[in-house]
Amino acid sequence: MNIINHNFDYLRQRFLLTLASFLVACAGLLATGPVASAEIESSIARGGQLYDKWYLVIGAEEPQKSHTAYPSDKAYASKPKSNWRCKECHGWDYMGKDGAYSSGKHSTGIPGITAYQNADLSMVINVLKDSTHGFTDEMMDPQDFEDLAMFVSKGQVNMDKYIDRATKRVAGDIVQGEKVFNTVCAKCHGKDGKGVEDGEALGEVANANPWEAYHKIRNGQPDEDMPALLVLDNQIILNLLAYMQTLPE
Image (cartoon, rainbow, N blue to C red; front, side, top):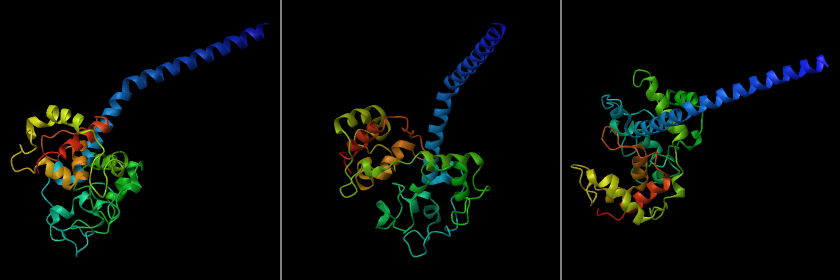
């Protein structure tokens, strides 16, 4: 009987310890989960801006020498501030030669970054620092590299699901998009989308390059007050972009 009681007490203690550990772990998740999620999303958005124009985001001087990996016979070969942008080779849809940049003045024949979706951040950073991409610790600090890698790994969207490649039409609800635009965007951009001085008309961007517009709605505009709307449901962003395509060019 003593042996049975001893075993029962031992099992009871183990159960209580296990339960306590479980509750502590749950409390930790509740305390840190939302914060961690928010940090990831803000990192993705900043990384999306770095992908767009990294030197503006970090306040660096514009590149003065052309990127060695950019083809010398292509349209932007003599424009370092353009050919050092990630998007210039890999595209706003992240598909490079297999996406919207398969032809036209932005065509380079360079692959996209879709192969790095969900890749380990350290691996992406190593690629950014390799001899092809040429980013160095003197150019960007560790947080910059981490944010850009976070975007490459976690921030890509398969835009072919939402934007018709041939027609450039967006799968969104125009009526609902107008509500979002008038509430969120019109104060700065104006009801007609032409309210930003020296800025392109939103109707023009949304129709000519909906992939760029989608990217910037989600991640924000480098070195500008325009916020990233990454935290919004994707359909809300699509509705907004669909409405923007109705604005005057």
